[in-house]
Structures are given as C-alpha cells and as structure tokens.
Amino acid sequence: MKLFAIIILSAIIIFLSVQIYRFSGLTVSAQNDFSVMKAKLDQAKLDAADFQSELDYYTNPVNLEKELRARFNYKSPGENMIIIVPSTSSATSSGQ
Image (cartoon, rainbow, N blue to C red; front, side, top):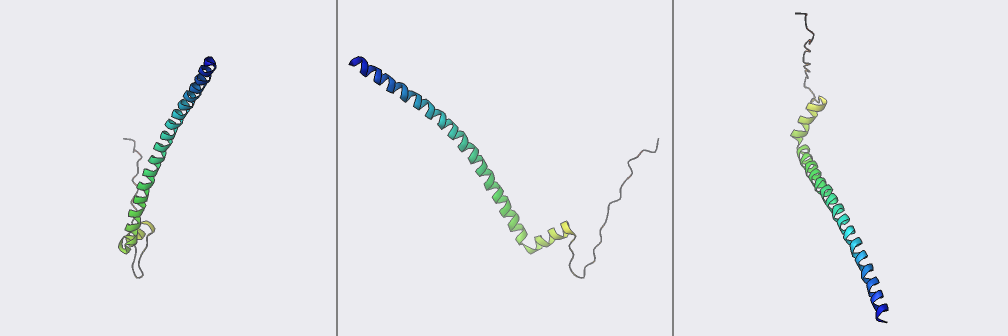
C-alpha cells in the first residue's frame, strides 16, 4: 500500500513539475509579447504627439497660408507670382 502511495505521489510531483516548466515557458513568451506591444504603444504615442503638433501648427491660418504658398504655389487674389527656376550648370568638361 505504501508503494502504491509513493508511486501516485511521484506521478503527481512529476506532472506538476512538467506543468510548472511549461508555465514558466509561457511566462517568458508573454513577457516578450508584452515588451513588443509596449514598444509599439510607445511609438504610437510618439506618433500621436507628432500628429497633434502638426495639427496645432496647421490650425493657425498664417502657418497654413505659408505652407500652401510653399507647396502649391498658392497666391492671393490680386497677387502676381514669379517662379524662379535655377539655371542648370553644365557638368561636361571642355577637354582641357
């Protein structure tokens, strides 16, 4: 009877040891996943802050007009626009 109890207890201990080992492996995996998600969250927060600062910049009408003029050659009614094209310099050698 004692031998049977020892065998049963040994089997239970082995089973619990295997479960603890598997659980520790899952814990490490979960910690790695958490670290990856935390890094993504931090990056998303930085992106949100950048977008908010750009939104604040473009809500100012002066800044919006400045960007429209720079990017799309926007002009107000009655204004004349001059577009200056830089001259291209010849990079060929003259054989000297």
